[in-house]
Amino acid sequence: MSRIFRAICSVLVALASTSSFAIAADPQAKTVVLVHGAFADGSSWQKVIPPLQDAGLNVIAVQNPLESLEGDVAFTKRAIRDAEGPVVLVGHSWGGVVITEAGSDPKVKSLVYVAAYAPDAGQSLVDVASKYPEQESRTTYVKDEDGYLKITDDGISKYFAAGLSPQEKELVAVVQGRFHVRATTAPVKHPAWRDKPTFMVVATDDQIISPALQRDQVKSANAEMVEVPSGHVAMLSHPEAVAEIIVRAAR
Image (cartoon, rainbow, N blue to C red; front, top):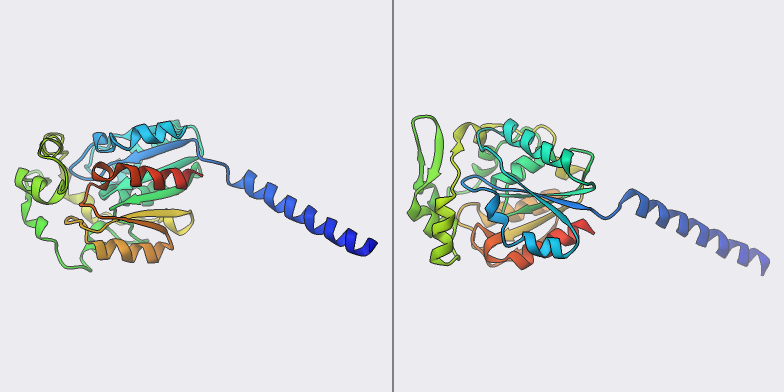
């Protein structure tokens, strides 16, 4: 009887030690850093920010210049530096490329991709997208003489902001950020999703990034996934679902 008792005690002690270690090594995140995509700015997270704050999380929405991968990663890393850690790093669209590189920061606890690209080492946005049929929306992209891309107002309404109200579509078009073409060919060096817990929102009606591409990335990253019947800007059309998975990543 005494041997059995001692064995049980040993198991309980071991479990307690393991549990304590897990809590110490994996604390709840304190801050969410939100990274917008191309042709957008930080206001694209306006509907997600309040529920995240209601959940007790600090929130930083980065305003990236969209001129290069290096520049956007630097802006994002400064936000991570200034944030109270641990951090959940969230990216939409092109922002997924940015968080893939910036997410290697030790303060980052987990990653959330919202209708976003998640390249592997040595891959660029173009490398990832070229494996899938070109979206019809690509015909509405316009490049100026300096190499900056924009989407026509019709393209914003029909493809980029599909599913939003006419007033919301107009606002998305007004705040559109110019995106330099050189960013599309810049390769990622250290994909953070290979080392950190990863969550992905797949927008099943996306006309900017192929839903098939998004689902394949879920498999590659072994990510926890939620699908939403949304166009490209899922955080504006389905903010509750997006906020919920971010909170889950923070826990």
